Image (tube, rainbow, N blue to C red; front, side, top):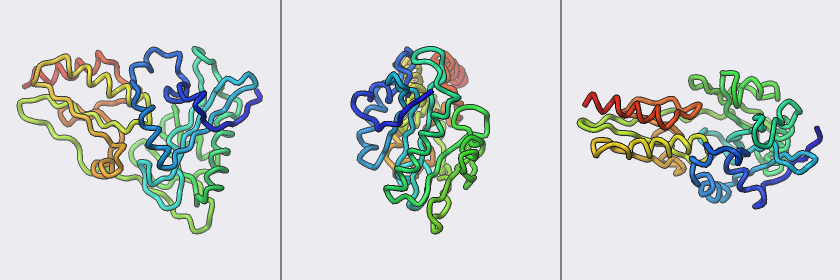
Length: 262
C-alpha cells in the first residue's frame, strides 16, 4: 500500500473529530465536544497529521502537541494524544499492517523536532489493544513512568532532555448522603470518552432528583491538575470502567442499583 502524510485541513475535519469512524452511528452519540475542543487545542499548539492512500482515502491519524497542554508533565517535550490507523472492516476499511502508524509517528517526530522539541512523549497500555506501550518501544521509545496499566513512554531528541512524568490523582469525587452522584470528567480530546459522558448524562436524567449529574471540564489545565484525572466516570465515588465505553443500559443499571441502596 502506498500512502502520503498530510496536515489536517477543513476538508477532513468531519472525519478527524470522530476518529475516522464517520460511518459509525455510535460515534454520533459523542456530540460535538471534540469539534469545540480542537479550536482551543490548536491555539495551544495541537498538531494533527493524516495518512491517505493512493485514492485519497484517509486511513490513519496522529494528534500531538506541547506536553504542557497534555495530561502529563515535562519540559520542552511534545506529547502524542493518540495515533490511530483504521482497522475495521466497516466504513473505510482496514489500513493496518502496512506501516502507516510508524510513518505517522515519524512525521510527528520530525515536525516536533523542527519546532524545537527536546523529545516526544506518548502514553501506552500494557494490554495488547489500542496504544500499546510495546509498539512504541519498538519505535525506539523508553518507559519514563508508570501508573497502573498505563505507561508513559518517551524518545529524547537532545542530550539535555529530561524524562516526563504522570500527573497523579489528587482526589476522587465523594458520595453525597441521600443522593446518587454521577460525576463525569471530560477533557474533550477523545470521542470515545465524550460518548461515555453523553450516555451517563442521559442515564442520570432518566431518574428523579435524587440522582445528581456533575460535569468536571478537565480541558482547563488547572482543573485537571487539581484532580489528576482527564477522563473518567464515577458513580457515588466509585469509578466505572470506561474502556471500551459502557452502554447506556449498563450505566443506567449501575445508577439504579445505587439508588435502591439509599
